[in-house]
Length: 352
Image (cartoon, rainbow, N blue to C red; front, side, top):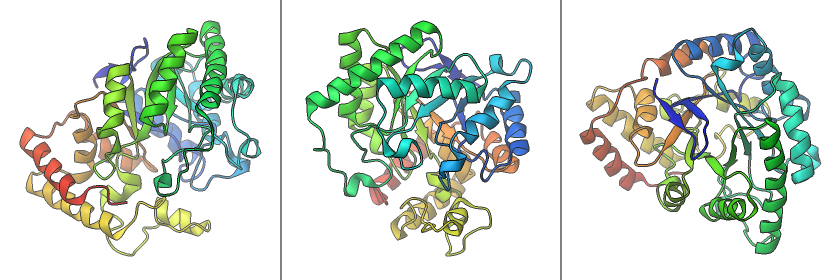
């Protein structure tokens, strides 16, 4: 598998990342460790986690569980040096710190807590899961109020957090700093404050990106290219929508939507499952079939053709799902197919 640098950092990772957010809920520890073994076997060495994980559902009692499962795998002889590990500090959440925001003091504590759970002495990429000022991500763009904090309050907060990040980098605990669920304005301000204070510059931004969700294509892509920041694309299969398994009203047993509904959720994949989205999925499946592609594998391969650096984060509840994804590694869609995808995008836009 090809290797890429994260932004302007010296952290080199596999061009595809394995997400771990189901480890401890939908994916047992034994299955999780088997997935990790298989991923490394094929050169997929970049692993993404978070203190909040596992999710679906998020529960106070399971916070940190995915890091612990990953940590027990990392503790096996030789494993830590074979992979690159990313994790995140949670933004305001009832499940973590009773909705309190993170600041420099909290960052220092959460880094050490993640290191303990991961059973390692270093984190290759440490990310802010979402901004303390709120986020338009996760369908909050319909209601997000960006006026909650003044510009100076935001800049002071950034300087405080970067001071903690600087200490962690100097001590060897962190190698690179990243964002998640951020805006173009937020990304550029983090870079400005880092330049002014001498703090670590943003190496990566982890935002949602898929055939159905291409918000990064415009302002964020320009900002990321100009600031030398790599996109880590989460939900490249739109939380499973692009597999086609939700094209009927049925909820496949063990699926993300089914598990969510069983725990009192709506089962709509965080607002992604809409009538418009299902129409778009059907169109992409027809296009994939016309060109002899598996739609799941096409969804990942297409991302690697984009005109900006990005690393798709794949997730697999089961080993069989991971194998299906692995079968598509190394394949590249033709220019003709990519142009057809763009035509479909114009027809379907942002369907959720």
